[in-house]
Amino acid sequence: MSPDATHPQSIPLLDIHEASVQRGERLILDRLSLRLASGQHTAILGANGSGKSTLIRLIARQIYPLAREDGQPAIRIFGRDRWNVSELRSLIGIVSPALQGDYTSEESPLEVFDAVVSSFFAARGLWVNHQVTESMRERALKALDQVQALPLIGREMASLSTGEARRVLIARALVHRPRALLLDEPCTGLDPASRRRFLENLRQLAQSGMTLLLVTHHVEEILPEIDHVVVLRNGQLLRQGSKANTLTDEVLSAAFDMPVSVERRGDYFHASVG
Image 1 (cartoon, rainbow, N blue to C red):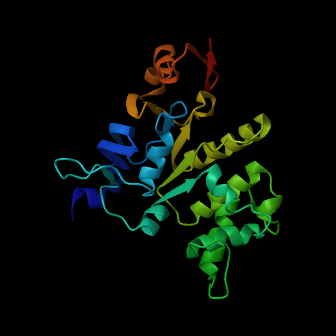
Image 2 (image 1 turned 30 degrees about the vertical axis):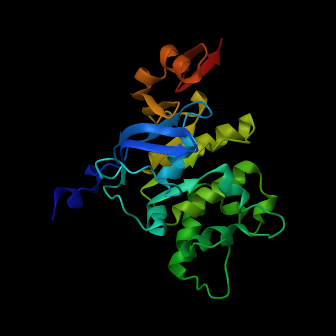
């Protein structure tokens, strides 16, 4: 057995080498190279249009990079360049505001527990051919408990607040016991109080051993448990490293194309423009 098979943490979660993604005549990602270690909490930071969303879609296998001239794969996830999408999504749970809209429609009501347990069948809700085992039921309840959403059972997804619905979607991802959670702008639409409660919940997940990949353009959302930051600009890697080396006036001013001042307040960093 190889050392990597014995110690899966030695295999990078993500290994991108000169990946380019083109839309029309424009390169959305321009020869991006990036390596993230397994178990490493990471924030991916950048302005709108910096390539964050494209990078997420690349990781999720929703899009593919341009072929490299040397024929080598541009992206490997957990050491592999070929994946069955369903298998990959059980290893990396993805939660985004766009995904949330699929589960909160008032036209087709969906109960909270059904929304979570149906993840085992890669379905939106339960159907007559779905046989929910006791093990599935226990894992769904445990996942809801992890995100403090057990009291929401019995309610329809459409009746939940934005923060409540997002926690249920995290539980839906957690039933697979993924190795990482990819959170795409998870605080979008949350009021300040809801955002703080939601971030505290993410902190508990990080402290429990769940690897977090947090995609944001708000410095204030980078959790204390995250100390690796990737900063994108115009589809390229501007800087990566510890918060001390990336969350600086110089780096963020370049990332957002305007003067940015950064200060630390307790466990969090804050940025102001001008």
